Every structure is written in structure tokens, then in C-alpha cells.
Length: 68
Picture 1 (cartoon, one colour):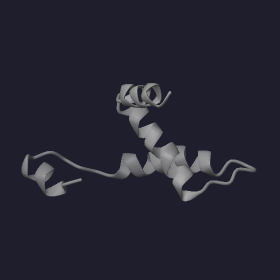
Picture 2 (cartoon, helix red, strand yellow):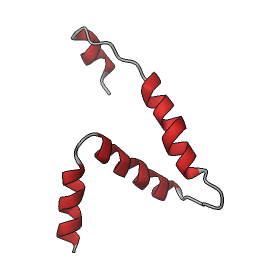
Picture 3 (cartoon, rainbow, N blue to C red):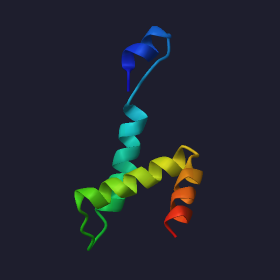
Picture 4 (cartoon, rainbow, N blue to C red):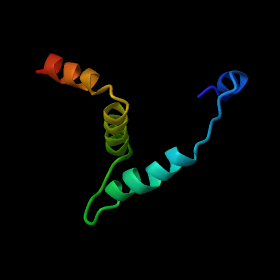
């Protein structure tokens, strides 16, 4: 993220909510009992969650349809 660009526009930036979501959502999922995650697999789950939460799931849907 280009903090300077946002700061120059007078927009406030804080990473607290993102860090909290990481702790509460991503880490909890990855640390469930009996699960083992590779870095690549964990990143894939994080990416999917980002697409879902940002309202861009239609991109994933298109990729799945293209791969089928």
C-alpha cells in the first residue's frame, strides 16, 4: 500500500483492523486441531478470503469456469 499517496489525500490509514482480522480469522483457521498447512496452501486460503470479502468473488468464479 502506498501510504504516502493516501496520506497526501488526507485519508487516515490504520492497520489495526487488518491485523486483528488476521489474528482472529486466518490464524484460527490455520491452527485448527490436526491440520497442517503449507505456506502455499495458507496463502491460497488467505487470497480466497480476500476476494470474497472485497466483493470480487466473480473473478474467482470466472477462473473456475475457465478451468473446467
